[in-house]
Image (cartoon, rainbow, N blue to C red; front, top):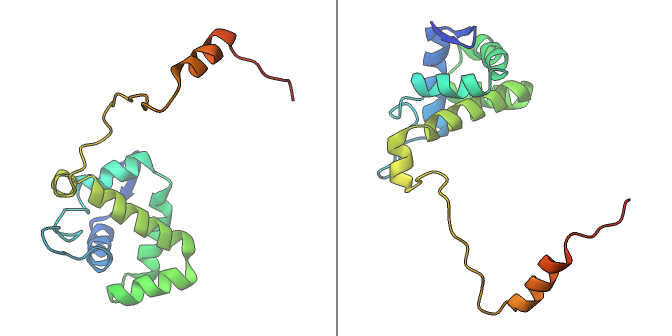
Amino acid sequence: MTATTGRFLPAECRDWLRELADDLIPAAGPMPSAAAAGIDSGQLDIVLRVLPNLVDDLLRAWRATAALPSGVALKQLSELDEAGHQAVLLAVAGSYYTNRTVRDLLGYTGQQPRTVQIAEDIDEDLLLRVVERGPIHRQA
């Protein structure tokens, strides 16, 4: 078992989630499947540290569908347990996109500071008058 902010997901639950994950995010071209990206390991822990409220929904969904094939389990969850289904989707997608290889293949470098250039067609004199005037507002 791996600790997640004082909560636990048993190895069996992680195995179940990995099986569902490959149905949700299969390999395509250079992109790895969710299981190949290791969503059930440390990446899942990252997601659950940020969203610890998913643990109860994941455990409930696992207990209800552990004996079912993954496609059937996903369909049953979508029909009978919306919160459990959403927890699975969020845990899988969140874990997948925390994988550095996945982000590199997508060309995602994270949030970067950017310098914004004022377009040439904006009259800076209009902006200067607003800045000189200062803030104005009415109490609502």
